[in-house]
Length: 458
Image: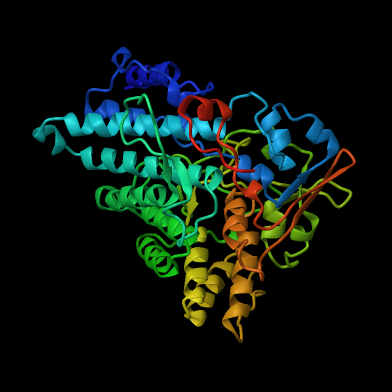
């Protein structure tokens, strides 16, 4: 197995370079093709490659700000430009947030084709369903992440006409790829995940592999993004029906620099699927500080205040609350967790008129976040008041997960939750207005030149 994993690491290098024009690489699969079930599972198990998620949304959202010294130390134009919402972010450099998900999609398609080519007897082997379910989940995860960055906020009335991202269900590098509609992209995500739910096991040996609860959690996240709240509530309930354990934050030390349990191989019961963000320097810089207004929203008895943030002096606090855990201290966690599912359930129920049930979900979560015997359950007189409470707690609970960018995009059309983002950097002021076209990133210019796709206005 060590030999096979080494070979697949080489496959990642030979076939999966993160250079420009990943979609245009004329990959020669004959160099090394997984032939057996174990080889295909090994390809999918390369979590150093397959579990990475884009991070430019994290850079562009409003949870954190960086000092001028930190900004000037950014190693890439992408970091500098994404942070200030510049029109052009690449400046001719590679955009990993585009290339890496398509690398994942290519490997998933290789695995799915290989699994389909196995004999009927081999398809009955233990692990075939798991491998196929994993490939479908990972492909859906990659396409979902691409849609959050390179297609506009989901609009059910126009999704069939709005541009999405290019879809390829084959490992063959086509001469001409089309840019599919937004609707087609989301439909593929849902289709892959629904099939994965039926194939994946109830538990996995390691949290880098998805299980059934994780697939249902991603379905719930997708439905919430699409503003299909009935479906979001349904998928969240199904996921919680399988796994609903919440971490008790009173068991962790606020003095610790990495307070949460090691996730891998299978610790931290709250984590459903382990995935770290691409490792931009912004994520772990000692000069990246939480937004002061956000920090002030945490009550003194709220344990998240001490577990999530490290006091650097001068009323400045850095983030230390990543679920990546001590085993990966430089990583920002971006995977799927039970606490997120509770929050999806709470919001979806409130939005569909089940206010009391939604607040019950929220209160069950928050009871595990406050000092013992200090939390007073939330109540609300109206659904609007309840929704405000849920969304405020969602931001406080899921800070540092990259989910804030997704929330800003989907809430921009609601005047009650619109925000104007503002930043100061090197004596220049920047702002991002609600509904701005810059909530959607440009597709790499070289891909546009090669394939002739419609470019995003920005």
